[in-house]
Length: 270
Image (cartoon, rainbow, N blue to C red; front, side):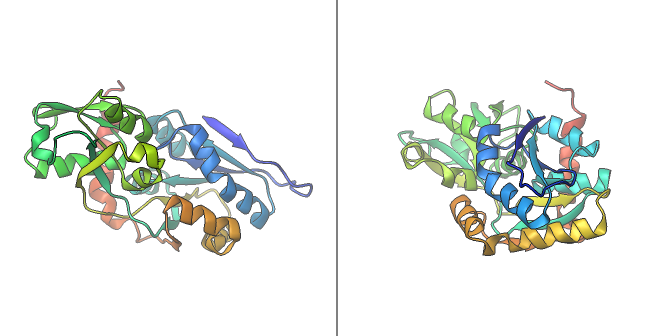
């Protein structure tokens, strides 16, 4: 696991609260993006906060199963899995939805998914929620994975987009939120030719070992983050929308996607 330690206040004497971030971006980008939230939680909860991620989604799932994190921020299919396998409790979720977009080079003549037959498509990771959404989308367009096209794992959304820009692949599937966060110069080299349905966003999940008072305090702090100046900037800049409460019923509709994640996790490691 990779860790970003935040500066500790003089009165911070409690054990650190360990927050795990799903590795959908590079570790540097994740730590830079979420440092304002870490600082805010440290102040609100009056205890040290340490932010961790993992080298890949499989490692993150393993760490979650082992209870290495007090709070995880994870996509909805993995949140469902964390609730099922490790009894993590939903605390909050982003108002913005997750949607996969199929991107090609701006100069490309491709205009529809059907034209991607017999091509390679870059993905952030086989376990990424965007990838699972994209697989269903391409299937509905009449394309079968492994027969009509092949996925190339590029590790992150950024690398998948770069694979298109650099001419390594004809197309890529990335999260629309990530696409909107790209620098304008980079985004201008890409074009969207398809989009999956929009579904629920990332969830903050609490480890069941936490005391009820700590869970409640963490949820209250998360829900109040958007009212803080740095919180408003964070949410506006990242296009996440507001942070909304989540409860034990919030993940019910994720069962199908979570089961697919379970199936993929049982496949041999590449």
